[in-house]
Image 1 (spheres, one colour):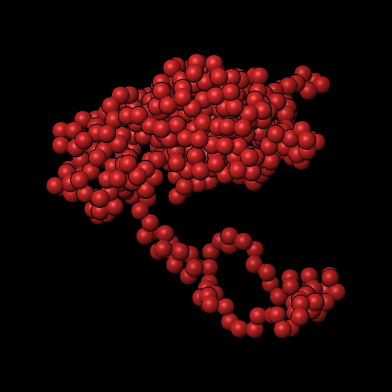
Image 2 (spheres, helix red, strand yellow):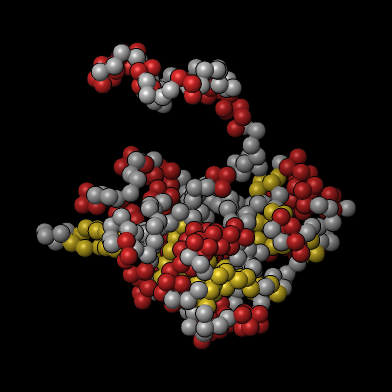
Amino acid sequence: MKHRYLPMTPQDEKAMLDTIGIKSIDELFADIPEKVRFKGEYNIKPAKSESSLTKELSQLAAKNADSNTYASFLGAGVYDHYKPIIVDHVISRSEFYTAYTPYQPEISQGELQAIFEFQTMISELTGMEIANSSMYDGGTSLAEAGMLAAGHTRRKKILVSRAVHPESRDVVRSYALGQSITVEEIPLKDGHTDLDALKEMIDDNTAAVMIQYPNFFGQVENLKEIEPIVHEAGALFTVSSNPLALGALTPPGTLGADITVGDAQPFGIPEAFGGPHCGYFAVTKALMRKVPGRLVGETTDEDGRRGFVLTLQAREQHIRRDKATSNICSNQALNALAASVAMTALGKEGTKEMAIQNITKTYYMKQQLKAAGFEIAFDGAHFNEIVVKTGAPVKQLNASLLQKGMIGGYDLGLSYEEFDRHVLIAVTEQRTKEEIDAFVQEMGATHA
């Protein structure tokens, strides 16, 4: 059996003890008083052999309901999308798999090129001029956007739509607390941001207005109407966007966004029970020097050969503390690479086709549910997700679906009191007509 690690032998242990000049492991702890040392037995299972442990953990893992064996209709920010097989092949190569972050850029050309390509594709998708080398996830990207806006405008209020992902709103509030920034939520109107309320709330102390596109309910916000409201008040227009949706929707940059952020998970990154994923962060050129993290640029060496460099670094480890704009310490290099490989494999036409399939299959689900007597909460253009009112509690509904080999939608009552007994259903390109029909049939049986 292959070892996944190199076990320590008694000879190894003796050699290390000899090197540091002691005779036993106990001598390492000589400075710790006897009275505070733990003398009992730990309440853990006895050690097992690697083969026995692997078998036990595999049995535990098999109890999980995942999208490899179940038809998943659960989205809410993390989705079951097609992943080109080449993704895992490329990211499993040792030069990428072991690369943490390019601290020595002159010898990290492969890693830097991969990041450069990621930046380029994100810029093209979002319609923005500059994109950084990636961030932790979509939530922290949005929070960093808020801090950038507050620092740039020297204002202390952020307006965030209630149609933005609930967890992202929580992260924004956490970041804002340390900076003494006020966060106010713009109310909803028919599943969209209430523009009349926005006009009332925005003022000359507003640093940013944050909108999700498509929003948490799958509704497509009207960015063209929101943009002048934001800019006339001197605030920065910040859009959190599903990058796959931009294969079919007009990019935020084209509609006047100053900052566009989001999570690259739809491109080649597994659901992984919620993470780790990869945030993206794109801005106009005017905000380039305020971007958190790093920017990789293209150049040539003294022989005229194409090469890559770290063009900008914004954290205090690299520049003076008073000039730093963020304490982001890393980029999600491996997941950013996965997204880049997926986008490359799909190409522009493939990305567009994948996005359109999400729209058409969700529309089919919507029509089938209507025909089965369900109430669809919101009208208008949508992407990926719809909100459905249920007769039975969503928890009960999802338990019934799970027994039929299907993972149900997200219980909106967990995040929105006004949407008790409403479920957020996601339909991606992965779902077949047969799966959708079976889902609707089971929904109807439980609803009745």
